Length: 452
Image (cartoon, rainbow, N blue to C red; front, top):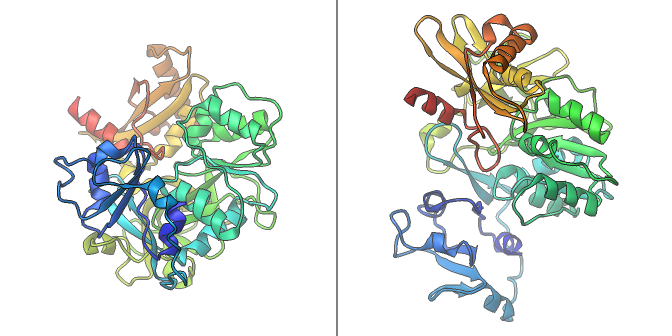
C-alpha cells in the first residue's frame, strides 16, 4: 500500500531491510533528500537519535501500531478522507522510481537510481526467464528490501497485473515447504542458500511446482541434481545485478529453453548484449577465455544504469573509457553457443602462480561431497605462489570435520577440477558470513584469515 502511494505521488522509494542496524539505515536516509520514513512499531527504536542518526531530522516518521510523540500514525492517516492526487504524477521513463543501495565487496554502499523505464527489463525477465504464466501461483522467496525481491516479487508482477505471494516471516525450511504446499505454488524463485537449506527438511506431498529458478549467488550443480530428483523439476540459474536487473538466464520460456550446461548461468536475455572482455584491455576475449563480464551499451536497449548517486569516480569505474561497455566487476567465460559460466567477482579471483582460479569452481566440487552443506573459497597471500586456496566449509548434520575429511576433500578437488586448485587449508565452520540477501561475503573471510 505504501509503495504504491509513493510511486503514485511521483516520489522515490528507498527500501529498508528489516535486519538493518542504525548505521545502515542512516546511510540510506541521510543526504539524499528523504522526507518521510515509514516504519512499524517494532522497528521504530532504530530511528531514535544516536551517533548515526541526528536528533534534528529532515524527515517525518510514520509509524504503524503505537506511534511515538511527534510521529504520524499510519492508521490515523488511513482514516482520513484525503484523496489521491489527480492526475497521477508522471516523471517520464527517466524519472527515478526506486533508489537501492549496493555495497559490493569494498567501500561504502552506493545509491543506485532505478528509473521507471527499467520496469521493461523486469517484465522481460519475468516473462522469458521465469516463464511466469497467467495461471501461475508465483512466490519469490527473496526479501523485497533487496533488488531481486523488490524487482521481481513486487514491481514486475504489479506492472503485468499478475499475482505474487509475499511472506512476512523469518525464513525456515519447514515454513518454506509449508507455503509451497498450502498455496499450491507453481513458480518459485529463491537464492541458492534457500534451496540448500530446504534440501535438509522433509518435502511435503502434493507440491505443484513446474518452474524453479535461482539468483543471487552461483548455483552449484548439486542443487540442480537434487531438485531434479526430489522435485521432478530442475532449478535454473540466473544472473543479474542491482544496477542492471537480471541479464543472463537459463530461461524457462519455451522459445528460449535449452538444456542446462553444468556450471553455466545461461545466455543473455532479450534486450541485453553481453561480452567477455580481456583482463587487460577493453577488447572482446576469444571464445572460452576467462575475462571481465561486460554489457554492450550500443546494443542493449534494456540497460538503464548510468551511474551511482553523488559518486562520479565510482560511477566512471563501471564504464569503459569510450562509454561502450558497462563493466560488471564479475569474471566469467562464454562458449560458442553463448552460454556464460560465472568465475567470480573480480575481487575474489585467486591468482596462484600463473593460474587464475575462480572460487565458484572449487566451491562446486566441495559442495558435491555428501558431508558438505556449503563451502566458500578465498585466496590468501603466499610467498612462493602469490596466493593459495583456502576453504571454509559448513558440514551437514552428523558429519565430522576431521583430518580424514580434509584429505578427502582436497583429493576430491584434485581429481574433479585440477591438482593445483585444491585448498591448502580447510576450516570447518558453523556458518558462512553472508549479506542479508544471501551472498557470501568472502572479503570477511579474507579479513579473518589475515587476522589469524
